[in-house]
Length: 512
Image 1 (cartoon, rainbow, N blue to C red):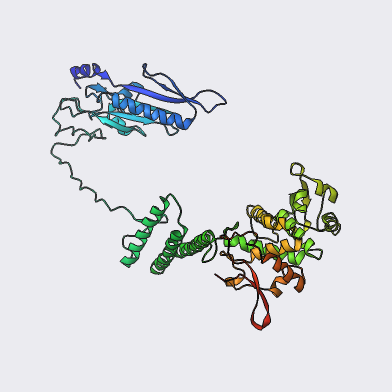
Image 2 (cartoon, one colour):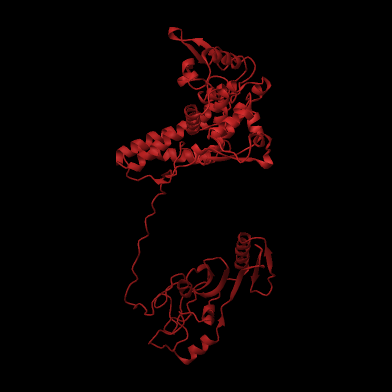
């Protein structure tokens, strides 16, 4: 490089550079402060780091919009900080101070943690060599700018046009033509369904079209303001059929598993829709919405029926409620109102008998339990329900399911109609048993065909005549506990009728 060129380069104006920082405002606070190296910018304080980052980015954008275009006559701002692009190579000292010949740009650099942002005016080669730098603006092409060899030359020879920096120290000879790069073909956007890409070559074509349409319909459903469970069930059923066909065509096991999941989702959505509208009959409001929850409720009733230490409906109902309180861990909290609300004949004596036989363990006396209030609940223990050494117990549901089942059972036996009628423990136990044996539409038994009294007698400890009397107490009411009829004139939810061979059957009336 000639002395005149060096002098000319030394007279160049350094590029602009300013920094925006995000720092903590103080200890023990989430507030942050934003500072800018520009003297005209005042410090800002914001309540959180997220708000501070958003404000810092907005501040940088304001500077970029207000700043003039990059100047082609400046040298790189990063040169002042010892940019490695301007330093001489190891073992090969260089005398020229200028190693850049590409257009000048405004580059934005930030750290990965989002704590500072820096805007600098440098050449595009330095911007490309800086990790994380993004170009915000580019200067116009200057044909008189010096090339890396220090002599001005027209753009077609040594220096290419603006936006095409060279990253090699060696210049391409004039005789070597620049290879043409064919533009890359742009593929159409990938079609997806359930986070899966639908292959372009999937056959049959009708299956691929069905999957693409289902993906669009599911995305449109997610944008709805109000849910439509019937529509969702139809979509899940179509998805199950399409994924089954897809699995048959490609022999992929995960697709078949996804089809089974769609079938389960369709059944659940259909069940929830029926619970909302009540099916063909009156509308019914259910507190348990998933079929697995009803299975768990029936499993608890069956377990208590086989493991109650004392006979009679009073002992069965109390053991049931205590089992729901202490399931999974064997311990739970109890207050006096939980026992007095069951309609027991002699609750104090019954609690004493359960304690005496070892089925229940209390820290005090039965009187203390009956006198306890929510602010000083009694900690009870059922040793038979405590987990074994392998951490397994008699029930398979989780810790989130237990309070839901317990709360549901408490609402059923404490129904307003039962309280007003001063129902006994046998009546409450029968109502709870019938509620677990009803379908989503409120019909009793499998398929809504009713429950035989003989089968019901195995669930409720009462004789045949007494059980019929209890059924008659529930039949005239407008609805079973745990259900809600649609209005006046609705037929009774359960009625006694004669089945084949004179067998007495309990079922829902089908009169309209």
